[in-house]
Image (cartoon, rainbow, N blue to C red; front, side):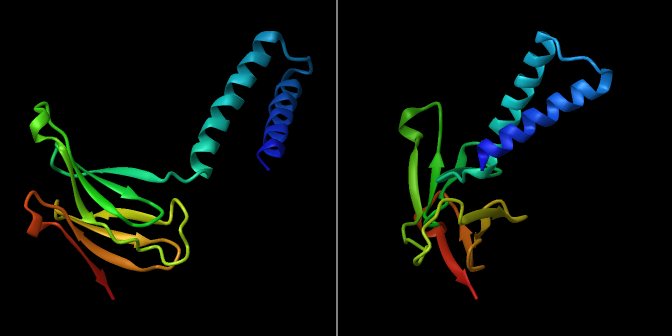
Length: 145
């Protein structure tokens, strides 16, 4: 499928260039077209291949949430210039995927509360309320029915 797209893209770019002035492309024009095709392919590859892990920013500059997009498992990631203040803390260790374990299935959405996110199962439509925090009792996940 991707090869067919590349062929069509090259043909389209060549045809547009030739049709504009009625003369074949110069080497510089060909290089420009190939550079444009390469850039478009990078964007297509990124968009079509779901990633297994994603980092989500929080309003705390030292805190990110790491989501396993195939299972819905979430870790809180703390970074710091002091090594002894860095680390990860589990928010959800349960595999929420059921039978459909594909990267890109789960997505986190921030709320207006900096500590709260909504976890969405994009395949089945299930949702969870997620909270991160510095203390263990402040980190949790619960299903929204």
